Image (cartoon, rainbow, N blue to C red):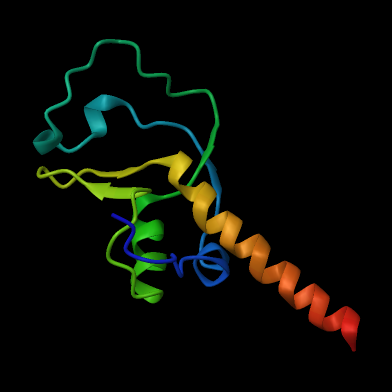
Length: 106
């Protein structure tokens, strides 16, 4: 069932900060995550991403409680689902296009 049009857009996107990072060794991960070190965790290759905590903070600023791009496991591990960011980006582009049109009309 469609609930309505999403309001998640430019304000949300503007509060996100992509970062470059490397993964921590599994030995430094919280024990409650229960992750076994299989030796496949690459700790040297830089990754472009975002901090899940920052995504949650941006959602809170926008007073959004549901977004498939952020979740928290029962053990406290926060996760990001990158593909879900397409939808607020579409709204952000539409908002920016409307601003450009308004400026061009002046």
